[in-house]
Image (cartoon, rainbow, N blue to C red; front, top):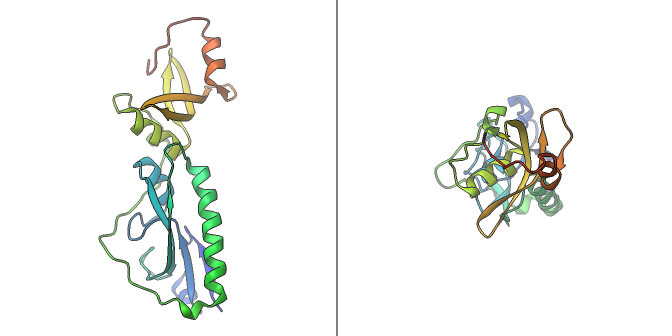
Amino acid sequence: MVVVISYGVILRDNVLSSAPCVNIHPSALPKYRGPSPIRTALYNGDTRSAVCLIKMTPELDAGDIYMSRDFDIGINADNKSIEEMVSNIASDMMVEFLANPSSYVPKPQCGEPTYTHKWTGDDELIDWSRDAYAIHNQIRALGAGRTKINNIDVKILKTEIIDGNLHILRLQPSGKNPMDWKSFVNGLRGAEIKIGE
């Protein structure tokens, strides 16, 4: 029997010792151990990552690697789209692995580990002195960036980069439903747009 666990689950030692336990982790281990590997990769602007099947150990995400499969991260990919991609990749990997587990020899992780953390609402605050790519990465990683536009508190929900420029696609003013950028601008009735104020 093999116990399969998706990432983010901690097991007691007695469970780990009762049967071989395999964990699905969405990063190129030992890079981005911990609770938020996908969000961290997006926030950092990574263009490639991986899905790893690892042997579970008492130390978090430190087990030997059974299988690893790389994938690309597009410039406008977001957390939801990457999670869907990872789910599909991991499903295929598990089918292959469970068909003949003994044929996969676990190999130690190589390199210096890096660790992720849990993101909070404070991480959503946008610093407009950062460049367009950094702000875009923040929003697509966390699902929202908080700021003021014309003294209105808003959450920017979706952006894209076109020719190196940041384009706001969707946002949510405080107390209102999400809307596209054009609808928001129309509501300003021709006022000069002041982002961050």
